[in-house]
Image (cartoon, rainbow, N blue to C red; front, side):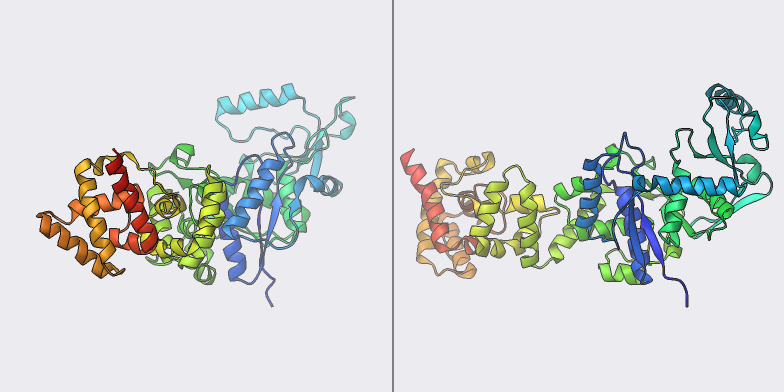
Length: 476
């Protein structure tokens, strides 16, 4: 029986949950779920100056909104410092690490020399084999790994393939600082081991860390997890993804009106593929996700493509479900009170409008804006284009149209016939009357079809709105 799969997502809480981090979390979650395993969450908050509660909350909220759940309690790396020190001492006792008393000045000289000579290896191992009795008085040492100096360190990466480093080019890096605080390298290895992590899936900017961490695993005699380093996300121009490309926090995409299912679908296609398929249900993602389907090339973030995909998801979402999403979403809008009150009070009209409104929308913001005509109180506030459309002559036609509509049965076919009959009688195209009707009914120049608008608003509200504009003309 094979051991159960355990992955982990381990963000540093020094900012929001960005798009790259969200994709890493999703890949870990999908791989674990695909194999019936677990995904754990570890907050790497050892940088006490830059780590904030606000950032931690943003990460947790972002994951929850995306529908990425984790197993067990959240682990906070800062609470495990004593365990990390214990591991460093264990390596020291086994002769796999040593105390280094090099001064800051010595280390700076080593850096300068390495830079001049173009070497990646900086530290020269000067305390590696020296007798601790030679240690200068009053100097607190660091603890360094006694790394292999010959041969190579190899990772058989599930995405990158075989990657090898010559050991002569790798430093005896620090495990424990002189103040007793563990370094990132040591903490990650100790935590992954203790948490039973079997697969490490992360960005390929951690590839060199993978080599160093493997050396720690081997020094401790621990089993090395399977590693999969996924290419980073680039902008449309091929440069590293930045804020100007749309590299915002997950909460920003939520505020822009994206559906979590659409964002999940977009993220899974950034580097992973299954033939030419673009849209996946979550169940399909879980069923199909494997590491060998991740490409080695950097993927490109395309905001327009994300918007289009979100529009497809909006149109495919059942109206009741979309209404519920909208009701939760409008809490974040500047005029949240208006939307929350009106959406609930006019739910039947909103549900009647959604099939039409969602055909033109790419985000929930556009849905909310598209529904304003349903939610507005009388007399309507007309926008500039609607004011222009409702000229004195147009209001005269509107008066005639109102009489024709009053006499017609309340269905789209009969209303259409009544207005067309008036247009023919006046020698006009249908649009000459339909546009003033739209402006008077919605306060805007664009909306669903004018007869569909009447059906959505109902007979009483439609006639009242038209009467408001006709009476406005008689007053002026």
